[in-house]
Length: 596
Image (cartoon, rainbow, N blue to C red; front, side):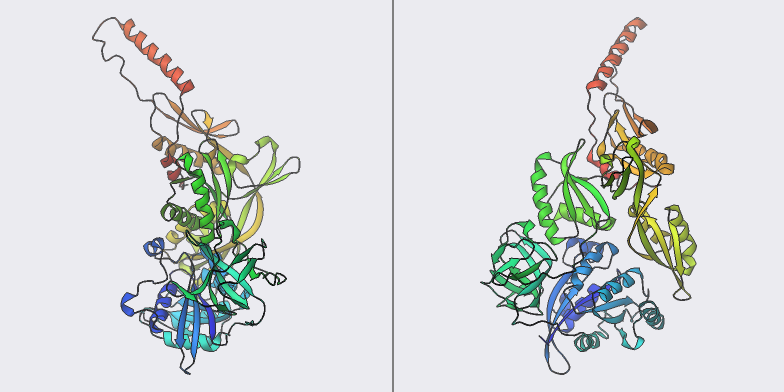
């Protein structure tokens, strides 16, 4: 066990984590140079977008300069703020972390956030400045930022180029020398941490394990501490570029175990696996659970696919345990599920994965957040769906979730970033100047205003140089109202939303205008309305398709034409009373983002 090193690569998005992982695989001889192309980013979505979505594990044999054989268990992690839960899970399986910084960008928001996660987990951090091959690399500035902002020693910083491999061999030696070997004993009773899992149609749920003590081998009987259910191990192994079967896993190693766990709900990330012969072994404490920020309803386009969607969500949760969901019923869309995500990018990726990987035809409603509703009778309700809100006359006040946002931006763009934050009802908490070129803006922002398009606009006003990180910071009372959308005088619960009173009418008009372009014409007039209680704040009408009933009237008395028109008018009035307007799925998709 003294020759095992478990480590993660953590960084801000686009700082070169996956490229560095590729160079490590190449230098250690696990892959050939000609086959290198983001080896650990295996999902189509990851390659299309150029980002890491899912943390990947790989076991690397390495012969160090001292001639000893080492086993390096590398976990490549995502960099976007929406996937920081993947990072926190990965760090639980490690003793050290390589903190990567782009030499042309410096320390950014997610660099600080990921470094703090590693500090909290008690990991040994190796600071590395990447992309030193670029002509505009700022090595001295980046070193000073790592020292002043994170307290890391300048003499400990390594310089590498993940693109051409410069300095990567020295990094591997530093990993062996600086990161401590795992603790624990193979002779103690079995204790494993589940830090990830995936579902296989033939072999059931396969958990990813970090063995903290003892050993696990085929034929062993294991027990899940949370449910106390026992299973027999069929196969164990480790992660190479695929799954590599082995005879057993010992304390300190990272791998997987197949135990024919058929029910997807049996496995929970953060659970502890122990031996069925030693059920008295205590569970591993302190695993951080995910905290969803954004919610939306998802419904099958074909109603009969509801059961298939539920089964797909159970399997998807094994692959992405930060997603939460519960059953929901909508008058407009039928039976579906309410899903919680860590952010808008996480929501977009998760829905796309459901469509591609699990072949689900789904429709998603407008995203919302959890509001705290204080009723006049003193009851406190936590509601993530506007359609569940009590009538306005029963509400004392509504509190909205607030996030503490850290924005790192060049000094030239501080003004535009502050204007954007103020427009989103942000409250400035403080400004820091880590160096002469950059500023750190700390804002308290309403989460509802941030989830829609704040990140995109922040990149726009800062010419792409600003970066941000955020965390929950409690609730704050605000003057909020529930806006109902009425189609043909009937409310569509899936389109309801909560908004500040002063901006509700503006957003209502934009939403109604978009609806008028997506709902097809009928044979009768369709009124579209946005209402706060009984007050109509916006309206547009979709005018009917008309049949020319006078086409066959060649001349003749005007009374005959009037009679035909009156008859048509009566028919349309009757049709409007019994007619049903179906809101197409394109309407919901086009309403995902409403420009102010």
